[in-house]
Structures are given as C-alpha cells and as structure tokens.
Amino acid sequence: SRSDLLSLLLSARDDTGVGMTDEEVRDELATMLFAGSETTASTLAWAMYHIGQRPDVEEEILTEIGKAVGSRPVTFADVRSLPAITRVLDEVIRLHGVTTLMRRSVEPVVIGGYEIPAETEVLFSPYAMHRDPELYPDPDRFDPDRWLPEHMAVRPRHHVVPFGAGSRKCIGDKFAWLEATIFLATILPRWKLRSVPGSKPPAEAVASMAYPIRVPMVVHRRETG
Image 1: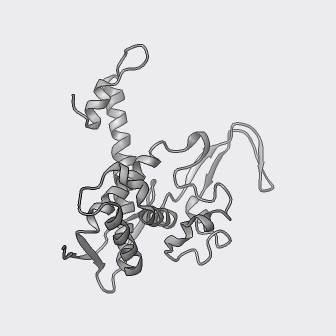
Image 2: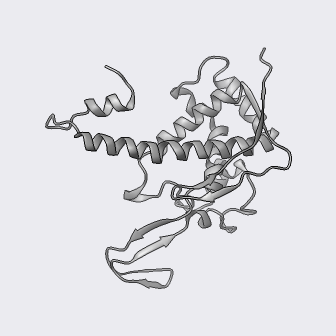
Image 3: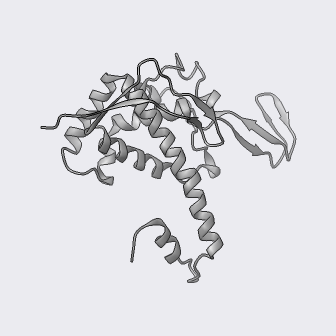
C-alpha cells in the first residue's frame, strides 16, 4: 500500500501475474541509485553553480516560480509552467553531461566516410558534440537562451543527446527532468547560493557525466514576504 520505489517494485506483476525475483529487484534498485541519483545530484550541483553566477537568470527563474507556484509546494503539474528552469537544465547537461558512450556495430556501415566493420566497438563523445561551435556558438559559455524555441528550430533533430537516442535512449530522462525541476523550484525561492570568490568546481569525467568533486558556495536565506 506504499508508493516508494522499493514497494512498487516488490508489488509489480507482469501480464501473467508473476513478480520480480529478489535479484531483479536488487538490480533495478542499483540502476536507480547509480543512474538516477548521482547523475541528478551532479546536474543540480552544476545548475546551482551556474545560476549563482548569473543573477539575471536567477531573477527570471524566481519570477517564473512566483507566477506559476506562489508560496505553495511545487507539484508535478507545475513543471510545464517552468520553462526557464528547463532551459537552465538543458544548458547544464549540454555543458556537463555524458562524456563518452560506446556502441557495437551489428553490420558493416559507413559513417562520415569511414568504413566500420560489423562487431566493432565504437567510442563517441556527446561531450565533444555538445560543444561543437557550429551548433553552439561560444560553446563553453553558459547560455540558457540557446534553448528558446526559435534557436532550437535551426539545429538538427539530434543536436543534443545527453540521454542517447532511438531505441537505446535512456528511459529515465523525463523522471530526471521532473526531479531536478521540482528541486530547483523548491530551493531557489528559499535560498540564494553564491560561489566562494575565486573558486571553480574541480571536475572529473566519470561514466555518467562530468562530475563536480566539490562546489564551494555561500548560502543565504532569502527574505520572504
């Protein structure tokens, strides 16, 4: 009768009425902890860092939250009314998302003039692709306005693939966006975060993304009316 993830997995049944084994439940939980928690935390750390350096972006977000949510708790239904936060998250993941992915060719194929035999492991870098200056002018600059509809319309369909694409696209993308949006919409009206002067988050590339080792910030409680 509970709605937490573990309870839902334990109570899940397929079309024949069979539930998961203990090992399957364990594997699902491990996947969520690795792919659904650390990655979201890293994204939020980078988001708070960049927002703290852009008071104009922060003010736009706060105005949006005030109009869409007010002083009540944020809900799933509010996410669609918070496009400024979505643009910030899109830009954060473009800058600090998955560094490399690997795929295996199932048949011979030619990509960009290169012949790739069947059963070849191919390593490619979404991190590099997302910093292509032809797609993103001044690519190292944090600019959420890149994600305004009129700017996105001129780019190819798969110009950004932080969650992969096609049949192998990560099924957790919408969950991650919901989780991160609700977090920012809850925290930002209550707290103002600013980088420690002279500091820059050291980062290292891990399997999931460019992971911030630490993000030194000063936290101030906001004055509420």
